[in-house]
Length: 424
Ligand code: NAD
Image 1 (cartoon, rainbow, N blue to C red):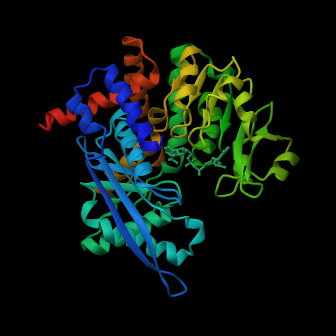
Image 2: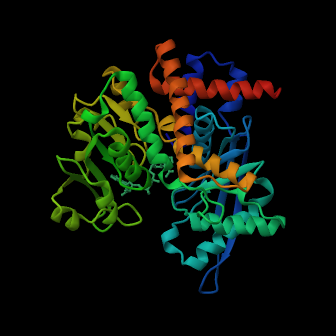
Image 3: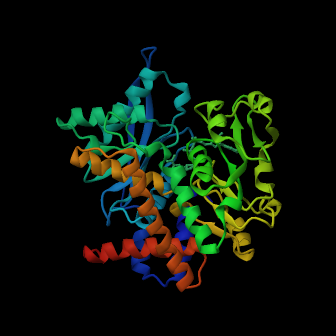
C-alpha cells in the first residue's frame, strides 16, 4: 500500500463506522485539485535540469488550503495526495479556518548548491503562483525545505503579483514576515496535549518518565517542554546518525538535559555520540528507546516506527503514546494499543501546534502587526487545549478510540462546511 492508499483506507474505515453518506465520502476520498508541473533550472555548470513539482489541494471547504512543500527524492503525486488529505483533518481538528494541501519536488536538496536551490524555489512559484495565494492556498516548509527557501518563494510571489504579499507562505524567517514561537510550536503543542491527557487520566506529571524517538525540531522542544511545563523526566532520546547511517538511543536514568543535547546536535538532528558519552549518556541501539520502562512514549522522528513486529517490546508501564511525528504507528500496531488500553494522542491532534502557529503567522501578516512570543504560545495553548477537549468529549461520549474520535471531529467539521456552502 502506498501512502495515499493508506490515507484512503483510514478514511474509508471511519466513513463506514460513522455511516457517512457515500456521495460525501466519494468527494472526500480524493483531492479537489492537483497540479504537476515542470521546473527547468539553470544549474551552476550552465546546463538545464528539469525537475517535477507538485501541488495538491485536498479540500478547501473550511478555508484556503494549507500545507508544506517537501523537497525529497522519493516524492510522488501519491505521497503528496496523502499528506494533503491528512492536512485537511489536521486543520479541522485544530479548528483553524483552513483546508488541506501539500506540495513537493522530487529532489534531494543536499545535492544542490545554494544558488540552484534558490532558482528551484523561484521556479516552483513561477509555475504555480496563479493557483496559490493568501486566500487560495498557503504553502509552508516541510521535509527538505527551510525558512530561507520560504523567504525566496515569498519574494518571487511578490514579484509576480507586484505587491508585498507575505501571507502567501508561512514558516518565513522572523523579521521577514515570520512569527515568533513557530520553532517551538509543534513540540510545545505535543506537551500541551500530554498535560491534558494526564489530567484526564489522573496522572501526576511530575512523577512521570518519557522516552522520545527523534531529536529534530519536534522532539527537541517536546523534551524541553516535558520538564519545563510538566516537571517530568525524559530519560531517553534516539536520533539518526548520518555518518554511521544508523540510529542510536541516548539514555540517562536521572534524565537527559535537552538543552545540552541540542548544543551537540547538527541541523539534521544527529547527536554527537562521543560528546554524549563524555557527558555520562549511555549510547544504545536505535530501537532501545521503544523498550524503556517509562510512562510515556513520544515518537517524533518519521513514519511507521511502531510496527506489528516492534510493538511487543513496549513496556507494560507505558500508559500514553503522544504521536509527535506524522504516522509513526502502523495500523497493526495501533490495534495492539487499542487492546492494551494505551491512551494514544493521535498525530494530527498531537502535532497540530505547528500548523496552528502557521495560521497565526498568516493572521499577523494580514494585520501587519506582530505578537510577542508569549502571546503566540498562550494562544497556541488555548487552541490546542480546546481541540484536545473536543476529541476527548467524542471519545468519552461515543466510547471510541482517541484516533477514531479525532477523525470523527475532523470529518464532521469539514462535512458541515461543505453543507453550509451548498456543495452537498
Ligand atoms: P527533523 O528533520 O527536524 O528531525 C527528525 C529527527 O528524527 C532527527 O533527529 C533524525 O535524526 C531523527 N530520525 C530520523 N530517522 C530516525 C530513525 N530511524 N530513528 C531515530 N531517529 C530518527 O524533523 P521534525 O520537523 O522534527 O519532524 C519530525 C516528524 O514530525 C515528522 O514526521 C514530521 O512530518 C512531523 N511534523 C513536524 C512538524 C514541524 O513543525 N516540524 C509539524 C507537524 C508534524
